[in-house]
Image (cartoon, rainbow, N blue to C red):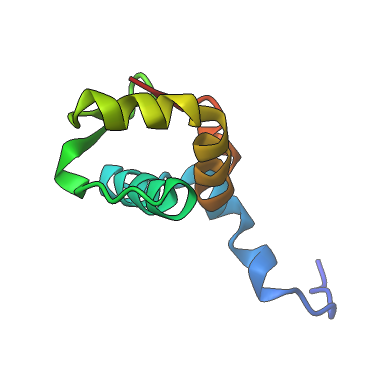
Length: 95
């Protein structure tokens, strides 16, 4: 079988791995804290955020006032997180 002489985009070479590989928990937690800081201008320590891959949920151990503010803007925050991490996280929820 002869080899094709077409040039492939470098980004196309990694498409297979983008679909298979999952970012580590810390990456999801970091992306969430960054989005909350950018969107709501609330700084949260990354140690207070936990991500559970099996249930696809983000848990927060922050004061209730901050948690309520995040829950109030939950859809906007999650939209930005999915934009950073990919469509695999479109079912992400906040507890």
